Amino acid sequence: MIVARDADCILLDTSVIVNFVEAGMLIPLAGYLPNAAVTLDVDIELRRLAGTRFAELATLDRLHWPSGEPLALPPDLLDDAEALRKLNASPGAHEAANRGEIATALLAARLRVAAIIDDALGKGLCKMRGVPRLSTAQLVAEMVVVGAVDTDSGFLVFDTSTPDGIGRAEFEEALDRARSTLSG
Image 1 (cartoon, rainbow, N blue to C red):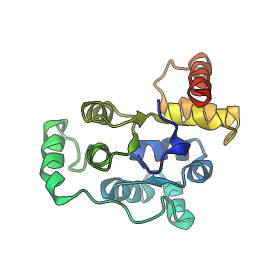
Image 2 (cartoon, helix red, strand yellow):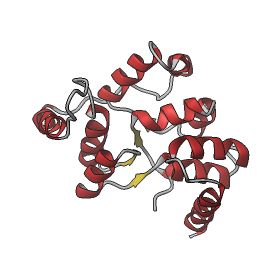
Image 3 (cartoon, helix red, strand yellow):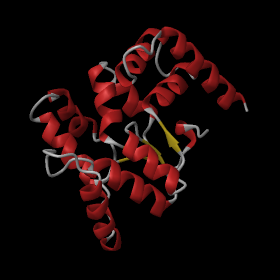
Image 4 (cartoon, rainbow, N blue to C red):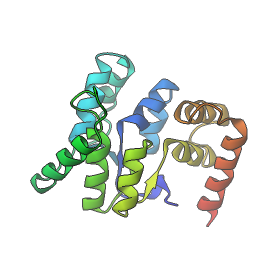
C-alpha cells in the first residue's frame, strides 16, 4: 500500500474532497496533502458542487489548494476518456458523469503517480492501468495514525466515505492496516 504523505504528487478525485468537506475536515486534508493535484475535470466538478450542494468547497480557492493549476488531460487521452465515459454512462446520467474519476485514473497512469479514488469505475481503471490507489477511508486512517487528525474526526470522514453498515470495528481494522503500512 502507498503512503499518501510520502508521494511526490497524488491526484484526488472529487469524492475524496467532498467526503472531507462533509465531515468538516477540509483544512486538515489540505494541510496533510500539500502535494495533491486535481484534473481539470475534477476542478470543474468541484466548482459546480460549490455553487450547489457544498458551499464549503469555495474554501479551496481561499486555501490555494490544491496548489498549481488543475491538470488537463493530454490531447491523446481525450478520445479514450470520452469513450470510457460513454461506455460507463448510466441512462439519464448528466453529461459530465464519471469524467473526474476517468480523467484522474488516466492522468495518474500517464504521469505514473498515485491516486485517491473511491468509486468502482475509478478503482477499476486504476487497477487495469497499474495506478497505485488509496480510498478516502485508507487516507483518513493514515492521517489518524500519524496524528494529522484525531480519532473521532477521522472516524467522521471514514463513516462518510464508507457504505452503510461499515462502522467502528472496520475503522479500527483500517487503523491497524495503516499502522502496519507506516511501520513497514
